[in-house]
Image (cartoon, rainbow, N blue to C red; front, side):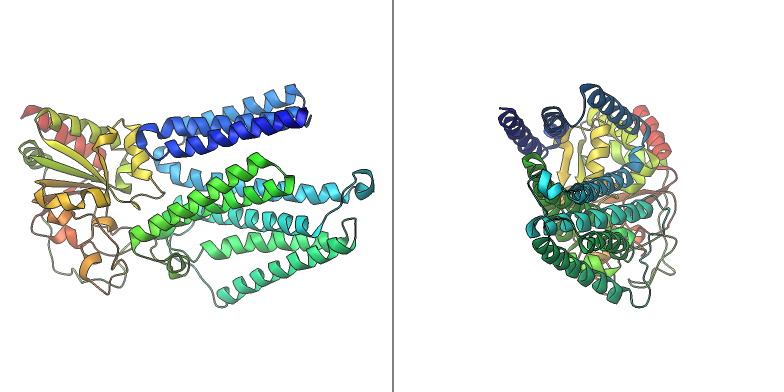
Length: 478
């Protein structure tokens, strides 16, 4: 009877996971979809802990209160600019949780006479599943926190490597595979967990931790959104493997959904950058934007057209169509609310307003969508790159707010540019483009942006939030 109740609870939670994921397809329903999936996980956790008598109701209540308190604190405390690294940290915590649960299973089998009193022993298939969970979990843990460091600029965003790093990575992979085979062979011979199995698990944990570091440090900062999506997929795969270790249906379903959706998102972002996943992982693209790097057409001697808030207000107020292009600079300046207010003022003047979203704008998948949703920008004003790129030729003004590489025309024609071939938003095809930036520093790809030097482009220098607020004040007076 108890097991039947658990199975029903897992079925209900699985349906909630799937339906919640389905609702994440649209910004209009994404928040409710996320809440539904979270509720599904809560149902699965409570069913497991309560019906399996793992914890007392008091302990479960304490855990729920502490966990909810930490979540509420982070939701209130972490700025939107810190959201990418928070997501990376969450991926890491998911990975280490899977590795620890798998390690606990080995400890359970190590209990004196566990194979006799429990009526079970560590089989070869279980040994492989446990080792996979440990390996993927540890890769996710350390890799995610390296990504956390790069996104938060605690670690340089430049690709880092050392002689023999690739060979060392291959050796750790081969050593991990060999340890898995060793564990499987030992567990098939001895009913109890032997020392070689324990040593193999320890080696896999250490190798996984080092692999996570070695796989992420050579990746440049411009590729971090793809890496975050991939690590998210890893955390799901690790959870699914742990589900097989525990024979937990809910964990298998949720892990498989996260793993599959993460891989799909990773592929979408690679397509948006016109690069293969292999190229992302070994290409070492992007880094700290302290100055321009090699590659790209030289802009030496070229000049830019600087503008003022007054002139921008006039251009926008008398335009028929305006497209805003948000980027990471908007997140840094916390300018999304000001942008939404400016859009509302323009709509009052019968200006058609749209927002163009590039898949890799920002530091995590969907970063710009999250920022604009937080500012209550209507969902029907948000358009993906493929939907809106054809409209720039009929657009009077394109306003680029902190975006850089995703509007660089060099991606179309300059074969020496590191971003050559990457689909971009066609801001340069608008009647006038206005770029809001603090300075002329290049973006994460580390190259100059040709758009800044176009004759139809104007630069509005300064803090994006303050600049937009100045434009709003002028628009209201027109």
